[in-house]
Amino acid sequence: MSDAFGVSKGARQFGPALPPKVSVMRPSSGISAWTLVIFVERGILRKVNGNWRKWLPYLFMVVAALSRWPGLFPPNFSAFYALAFCAGAFFPRRIRWWLPLGTLVVTDIALDFYYQSFSVMQLVNYAAYAGIIWFGTRFNHRSRFVSLLAGGILGAILFYLITNTAAWLFNPFHNPEYTKDLAGWLIALTKGTGGYPTTIEFFRNTLMSGGIFTGLFAGAMKLSEAAEPAEEEKEEETTPEAEPGKAPDEAGA
Image (cartoon, rainbow, N blue to C red; front, side, top):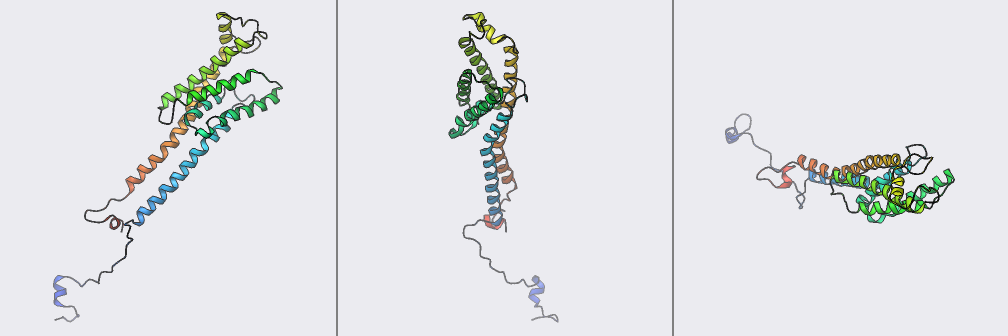
């Protein structure tokens, strides 16, 4: 029985009649549109972050090469001490050795043309840088920043000791003061060759640049590695949770 408006009394008693429920086909996999968006965003972020980490070593090469530009920095103030150490600690194995040493050779050739000079001692420098790379392999991306900074500084100290000891051993004819005894070795480590800044001044610049550039390089590598987990945690916090009693695909419907 219905009233004047054509609505049944039963409908008036229990509320207006509802339209028939339309059945919507959902994907059998149970993945909502929101989940698909999250997956796509994560993939893009990982790709961008991965490419950034991939190009960081080559960016470091450019910085290190520019740090050797004549007159740009004080003598022996260079990014190569830190670069060699960070190459051993962070770079992939396929480029860990040839990229820093190759860049060093190319820049040395350019500097030899500029200064019109070549010294056999450059071979000792290459051996010292190779030793720093090897020392850097004792560290990795899981090492603490303070440990990496200390390692870079220690690498600069090793370079100073190796190169000046080699000068003391193989350069007695150019500097007679480098006598083959403890006194001559200490002169090589402190005073150096006459007519040039003292070896201690060179060591100060080596130590400062080793610490500064190790901090920059290691910090950049650690920040790039921490970016992806941070983005993933942020995305997980924004992902809607399913309501009680609903399937995962119904939570985002």
